[in-house]
Each structure stands twice: as C-alpha cells, then as structure tokens.
Image 1 (tube, rainbow, N blue to C red):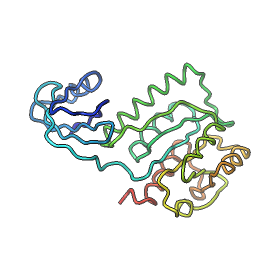
Image 2 (cartoon, helix red, strand yellow):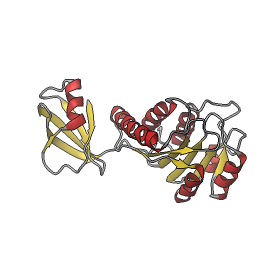
Image 3 (tube, one colour):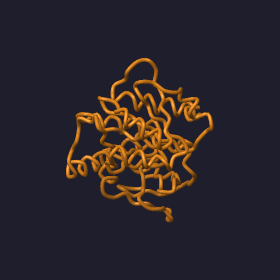
Image 4 (cartoon, rainbow, N blue to C red):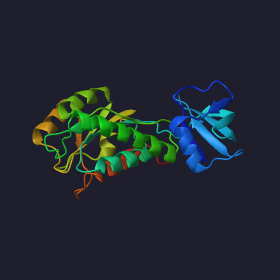
Length: 237
C-alpha cells in the first residue's frame, strides 16, 4: 500500500496529491480503486481510495499506531563519505524521532556552511522516504548541524542521555530503568570521542554506556544503539 505524508490536516473527504507526492504516485502507477494511506502532521492516519490520477477519497480516519512511545534524539557525529545517508535511513526505519548532526573534535568530515545546508536538504528527503517505506506516523526532523558543546547543552531537555563510549560504561538497561520518555543518544565518528567531550556530556547529565566488547563501525553503532533502546523500552514487542 502506498504511504504519504500531508503538510496540513485533512478536513475534506477528498485529498489531492501534488508535487513530489504526485510524481511518486505516478512512479508507483497508482490506479483507480487502489488503497492509499495519508498521515497528517498530527498523526491522523487517513485510509483512502484512489479515484483518479492524484485524487484520493478518504474512507476512514484513526490515530496512527506505528510510532514508538519514546522520543529518541540521535546526536550523531559526522562520519566520512556518505555514511550519514545510510545512518539516517536505517535509524528512521528503527524509530528515531529526531536526528542532530554534530561536529566533534575527532570528525574527519568538516563541510562548510553551504555544503551542510545542501546535505541537510538531502538528509531530510532521505528521512521522508524512509518514513514512507517503514510506514511511520511522523517524519523525523534532521536538524541543523551543531558543535559538540551545543549538542551537550541540548541534552538537558531529555529525561535520559545515553553516551555510547568505546571505553565502556553502564549497561543500557540500567540507564533506562526509570522508563524515560525522552532519550538522547550520542554516537561518535570514526575516531570516537575525546576525553573532554565525555566529561562535558557527563556534566550535562549524560551517562556513558557500552555496546559490548567489540568496537563497531561509525555507521553500525547508531543502529545497534537504537535497536537496544527500542527493545529495552518495549517498542519491538
């Protein structure tokens, strides 16, 4: 079934696809009578039937049940090459709510402002496509790139912050034992984190955590971390 996100609430019984959504519908070769789902910004899931090219009739409405019951923000240090594309795609599929790219002291990738703006646009499109494919109830936001110090300050808004560190820490199950509803996750780049960054994260309320005895690649660690968190919070049940 085709899955779309609207930019506004749907109050009418007819919804018309436009722009990229219309082009996507043409690629899918949607035909009259085929079922389509459209999710609104407030998470209302509208079951529709295609009437003609780009024209959908809403037949049923309900709250989308596909979202995790925890809000997880991934603070991801920029990796080399196009690894960020893969990280965003897979983390959206796994249920991340927001992604904050950051530049740490050991990042090899350090694009300038213009390049970052272009990358952010591409990353947001990847997040949208992944949300459509995995039938999410919302499209996770890919935020503007920040420094590590800015990211550490942002974590104060989270009930729990899990700082995955290659030199070890607490088991994730212990950090999440209080069943927090907003969780921050820190993942480093290929070079990991500098000791002063670890200290700053802990000062801002973060707790260092381990992903086991093996050292994971920069693009593997966030997927493993998010999978563990979703399992520990019951979102794989």
